[in-house]
Image (cartoon, rainbow, N blue to C red; front, side, top):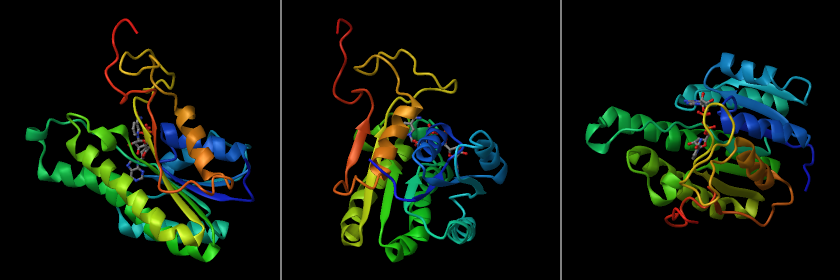
Length: 245
Ligand SMILES: NC(=O)c1ccc[n+]([C@@H]2O[C@H](COP(=O)([O-])OP(=O)(O)OC[C@H]3O[C@@H](n4cnc5c(N)ncnc54)[C@H](O)[C@@H]3O)[C@@H](O)[C@H]2O)c1
């Protein structure tokens, strides 16, 4: 395992999984551009990691093309390159299908799918020029097997998974790998895994468990892994869990 003077961008870096990922990358000597929807959110998260390594916060709204264009330019100017991109920002508002409006549908797709497109598109040329890249997109088990009440989100995440595979093929010869991490049942607001009958391991997943898989895929040595979608859900989608098991 190793990172050779790498620079990473993590979107949604102030959130649960994003923050854990930034911490893990910093521990491995990676310089981190932590991006989140506002500068205040990014700064607050960066302050919690002060002294852990090279990290800067950026307010970047991934639903706003101008913001993505401006901030991606600033990140490239500040760090000189981007080796690792973690497309992590996302939201999953629950709403029964009959009740959702077209506006709701478009917003959820725009954030979870188009946002991933915008940020990736903003950095891909620099990665090609750099001759190196590790792109890790956050999918979801919702995008693999669907989730009732989350039709727009499930459709968006299914889009993220197939976008990942397509990009992996397109950029394989450019030394850029593209993979997806699809969590399920990650821990709630308090940050601690809690008992959960819905998974075979009997608990929710921890944010740092997601961060470790993301960091593994971001590693220089993960060079032969591309186009993969990693389910990380404690066995949630394997099949029904019986009460006596
Ligand atoms: N937590 C889970 O159980 C779970 C399960 C499956 C997939 N995921 C995926 O993992 C990723 C991270 O989830 P999390 O649990 O850390 O969520 P979180 O809500 O803790 O963090 C998400 C972050 O994204 C940011 N964000 C939202 N809209 C944005 C925008 N327009 N521009 C920039 N940033 C924006 C938020 O400010 C927040 O900091 C998401 O893509 C989510 O869909 C999470």
